[in-house]
Length: 239
Image 1: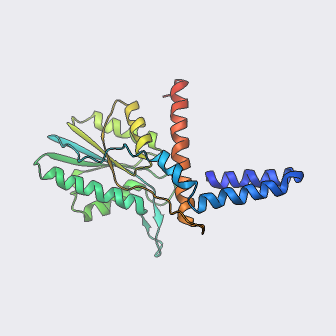
Image 2: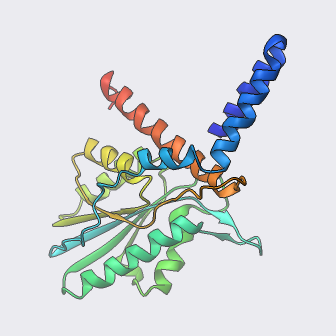
Image 3: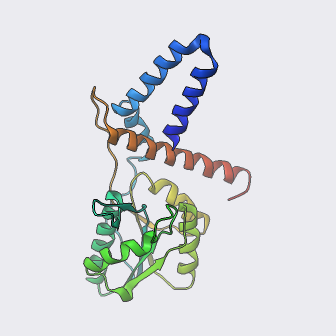
């Protein structure tokens, strides 16, 4: 939506400022080509996905909770509601962490946090549940939090669940682009989980425009805007 809004603003400027139509049209084409060809998308992703994010193996405790953040739902070719690619990576990494945790003979649970911001027939948490079961995570060790619509609500609602149990270790699983904002939101509620990155976005540089680069640019702009919003709200005392 950010790129669409940007395009709409350029279009409005072109309509209103007749004397500057040619340079505005040229700027619009150049800007969106830079996004689509990856040359602007790559530095935006570098800002949204800092390289210093932890890739160390997690440390499990006697009671460990693995927090899987929702990443949306989409329809496949058969019009079935499924997790998107990034969410599938989060499910896979969460299941592998669960298996590794169980090998230590610890008590382990997976908390799946994701509501229905897309207003689809099912929530993110409920859609992901069968995939975790296929990865051999027992239903008794899965906690569904299916009311969150934003990353902030993920943190708030998971904090309420965590507050009712005594966990010795918390592991947060999400994509690299969401991790910085997610950690800030969780720390608002006194939680400092161990980050476990499930996947990262990369721009493909070239001459020809690519739709994937536009998607990655939209994601990066969304996350950077979310970080700016967080710090603004913190400065005025809302967080």
